[in-house]
Length: 322
Image 1 (tube, rainbow, N blue to C red):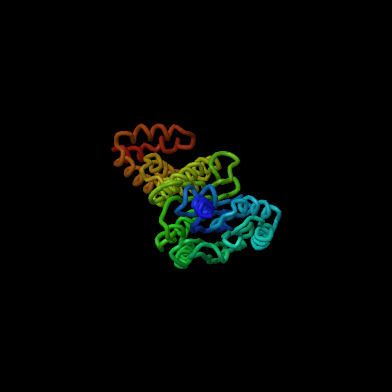
Image 2 (tube, helix red, strand yellow; image 1 turned 90 degrees about the vertical axis):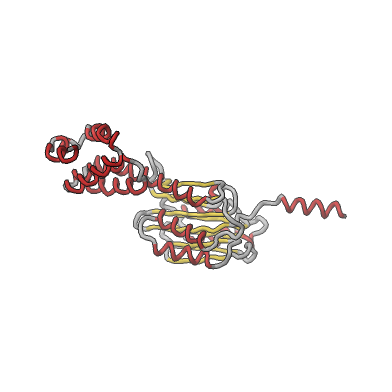
């Protein structure tokens, strides 16, 4: 009998771990973005919780997690079911043990939301909703976590990735996972919005194991967004939109402040957009920041098609290189 008890205790010690975490699932109608951001005292939370498909919706599945909720929910959303209908189907057809400890959140193609926190999800557990978003978590310090996430999401301007980041950081600042920190992830999908060709993953970044994953997640987000706007610069120039290209280049410079070429590109595109004084100011700052390499980089960039007007403007060049 004692041996049996010891065996059961050992088995419990090695049982599947709850994905105790806090997350936010949301939709941005203007940009056509669906996304999930999540953090946890759990290894590689990004490999379990976030699921999304452009034009379809996004899902977070956690707590006494049935990972199959993710791909199944996406398939049901593809069939045109609403978030609430998908949630009902997931729960009704869940034949695995521990269903009353699940936590799942869904946003559908139209921004409709649904969330479930089972009565046996590890405490504190709960969820909060707003327009086109739902925040949830378990083994949290308290309800202030999803409440802070929702407030930060709604107060943050800009694109969905930034709103998700603000919400996740606010949840952590409010206490987050009561056990501590380990991993974080963000997934944002947009039809054709990812880097390169035929890629709907606009953002997909993961910090799998770190004492504090938040600074690294922010660093990766800056790189990801900077590269996306860098691609956008080229596309806008090709479509003969120098003002739009300049705005995108300013985003590159914002997200990659150490990128001297990004600062130079802002200056050159300001010139093409008709603002010579702004161009001169920005290029002078870029020159002061990297005097050794400035002329070489300037010559390389201005050899590209579209910059001939700058090379022909002797007065402007004299002011820049005097």
